[in-house]
Length: 142
Image 1 (spheres, rainbow, N blue to C red):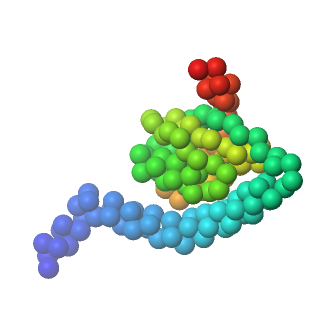
Image 2: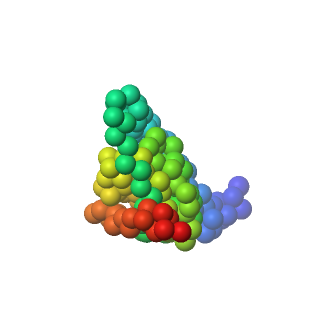
């Protein structure tokens, strides 16, 4: 028993507790919020598709995230892709390339809601807004 108490004071124990608390926060806070965002995005994409003039404005944008760990960057990339109207094309070293179906989905990236929700849960710095670089023109020229 004494060995377990001594081992529990080692460096690995707090990280295990932090991971568990991060996982609990993720499940209780982030997942319901993400599911709500997915529902709202589904409604938006359905509205675009059912509109007679099909008002899509596809763009490819790039931005840099302030999320420091690879796990949070992967979570951001997957969350963007799960949300209808956006697809993460590439995510390398904190630089994300995303296809946006409309100006509304593009503005959703600028607002940094997903980024900041992940940052808050995992203790990374939040941003006021994300600066997007429109690379659609560059892709069209290639």
